[in-house]
Each structure stands twice: as C-alpha cells, then as structure tokens.
Length: 82
Image 1 (cartoon, rainbow, N blue to C red):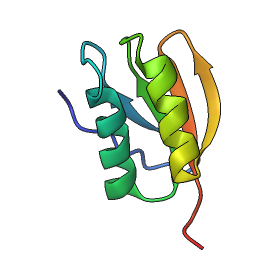
Image 2 (cartoon, one colour; image 1 turned 180 degrees about the horizontal axis):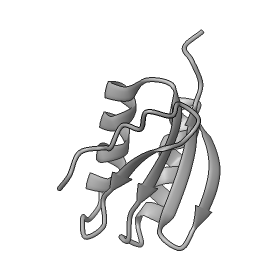
Image 3 (cartoon, rainbow, N blue to C red; image 1 turned 90 degrees about the vertical axis):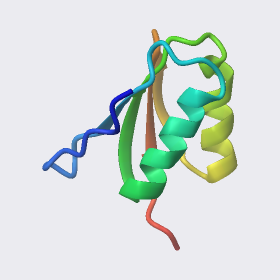
C-alpha cells in the first residue's frame, strides 16, 4: 500500500489510503502517519467495517479530534504536543 501523501499546504489533510486492508491495519497506518507527520489533519480511507469502531476509539485514546466520519472516510485533527 502507498504511504501517506504529504501535502505542501499545511491546512489540507494528509491522505492515507487503507482501502482493502483489514483490522487492525487501517488504524496502524493512521497511527504511523501521525507519528511520522506530526500535528495536523489526516484523512483516512478505510473500507473495513471494523474501522467504524477502531478509528474513533484510536482518536479518543490519543487525544485526537474526529472531525468527520462518513462512507469509509475518517478525518482526524491531531493537536500539537503540549
């Protein structure tokens, strides 16, 4: 699978395509992208039904904000470390 795409515009989300991957890989891909990319907005594409539970749980556990969740698209906002 392709790694996260880093955009030049800091306001636009970084994209992670985890379509076709099964639990727990979509959550792991998102966590790795955040670890490598730092604070900002991330958009995850994941078609595994388990992602509907895993991604909100991961965001809550890590202190991220789940900005949007609809039809296999999850967008999270990761704050700067305090």
